[in-house]
Length: 179
Image 1 (tube, rainbow, N blue to C red):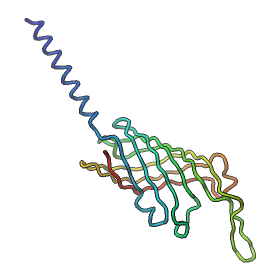
Image 2 (image 1 turned 60 degrees about the horizontal axis):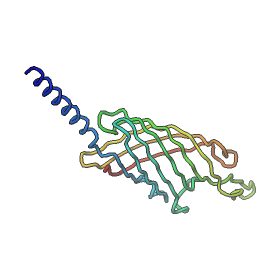
Image 3 (image 1 turned 90 degrees about the vertical axis):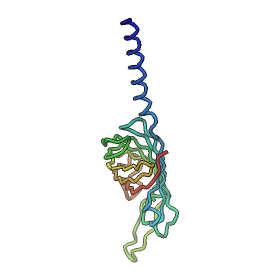
Image 4 (image 1 turned 60 degrees about the vertical axis):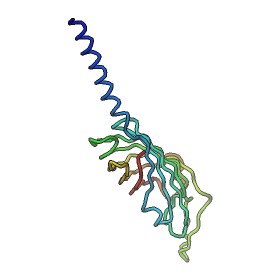
């Protein structure tokens, strides 16, 4: 008789543990986001992020300039991948730190004429790779809407001498949706 009760208690325990594990796997893990301030400056950035677990995620961002008259950026386009570590209490949200890699196209070195202060670009655009770190915070509503701010800094690794820049900056004011 004691063996029957023991077996029932063990089966109940296994079911309870499985129920707790299933609850965490029902979290939505995919996100799409858009940097909402960049279109005002003639550029566009979209991001896809996939949560690995409640404390970390991987993502990819694509940046491009669509209006060179409005944009003061020397950055033409970039593709950035990142890994984030979250420190908040909710699933993949709150304060985070990230490491990123960025493949980018940057305007070539500019030469200024001292007589009439006109400028022209020497050579063509430069493609380079950067590594960097960033910080930010993400808030997610129960319905899945996302608000995120982030900032990051990285160093050009290979062709910095061919441009007027040795570093890249990532700034984001993103709105999105988790599904």
